Image (cartoon, rainbow, N blue to C red; front, side, top):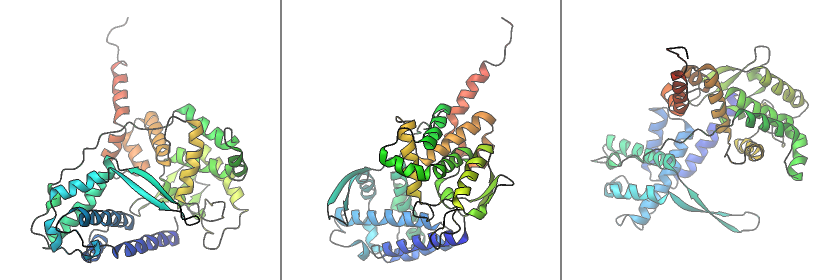
Length: 360
């Protein structure tokens, strides 16, 4: 990932945070500065906090009797002394199911959608609130940290959604030949299939994250050593290696990529959109969804599920959970163990049948 791309991404998120701060209490400016400088929190994380806190303060000014009538921006730290455990729990309950309205720029038509925050979504929002209240308490703005008394939503482990070997082969065949696509999709497919195969193969052959994929620059790939440079979450850079199938898919696309003249400012990007710009996260999500709906219609396959597919295949072949953690870029091997615990159980069951004490 180029330094220019990373800097631009950070600028974009900082600009979003600055816009959101106009809707937030004035003390949030100091809070976000603390998160950035003292805790080295990533700009993406701070943006997520800003969104959560804006929604929380909007809820408080509607539901808390002592704060009704105030705007979120008018709130002071002293106002938050009236916040109760019930307020935070009520907010978490309110975002479980909520309605989002979108206004079309072309027609002015209002579209209504019902959205849901699952266990992880509510836990993240509580984390945002706890982080702010902890800071306010430590700074002496609050006498008690009421948010610390709110219980964390219970997280139930979900089964790993992944592709089986035949589904992986089917996915790549569809991306290559376009079978099952609509006539409109077929027209685009003729122009993008080589790129799409390279993207899918890279996901399935290395397990990288979608943010890592879209950030790859031409100079990051070394075909001679079958390796490439990725920038992990948190900004750390690592060199990963790929096998023969990934090499061929990337080389096929690179030959085509060299014939494309990118839009100014996107010359370094490896994967380009049809607009000749660096491909976006949304575009990659859509292309994965397009092919996966045909190859595995009963599974909701996303780029992250392709990452899980790779992790599963690697663990089944190697049996080395530390290798899987290292390649996937997990900072804590316990994260990897949690995701692949079911596979460990299967291996333990198989082990029970491997040793024969007596011959039949």
